Amino acid sequence: MLATAATLIESREIAPEVRHFVFEIPGVECLDFIPGQWVSLTAEVAGQPIKRAYSIASPPGGNRFELCLNRVQDGHLSPYLFDMRPGASIAMKGPYGVFVLRQPPRDSLMVAAGTGVAPFRSILKAALPAHGCPRFTLLFGVRHEDRILYREEFEQMARQWPQFRFWPTLSRPARDGPAAPAASSSTWRRRSPIGGTSTCISAGSRRW
Image: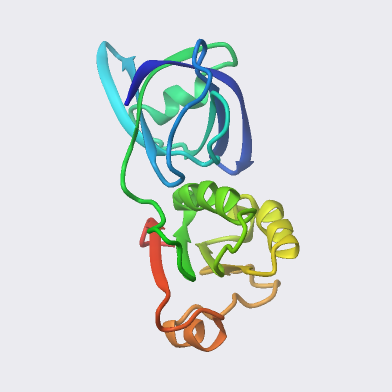
């Protein structure tokens, strides 16, 4: 477990009130973590230390890590993070957590909602290039189409890796747009290529 300061390299909006952050840990050659794990960030806000846990959204490699965060209007730390500028630092500890693929990996159905897609992005970017990678299906539930985070990335991954399927699902599609894909469990079982010995893992809000 590492306790240090992380420096913000960049942040960019990827959906309304959602930003992608890239942090770097100066003086550290490599941040050693397992895809799916999280880090703890701490900052002083209004004179009080505020600590929050955030899943890493990037695969291991070098001294950088990426996060995907939504701004919580009444939150204590997310507004602080959204106001950070490149070059600013924040206290960081980690990695922590056991939300990782079981070994050996098996065919898996990954169910994500909102920013809960972050650990799956880390897992998929690390696992798909590996030789003998099992089949993965990512069912990503959001309310509106502009909330499908990393859509182009996941679609490109699905084209590049035949063992990966990406199914975005809308709970509130535009009235003049196409209907949302069906998201019932029976539909998943009929369409999913994974079988009865597969693993199902989920992350994110239960309210799409």
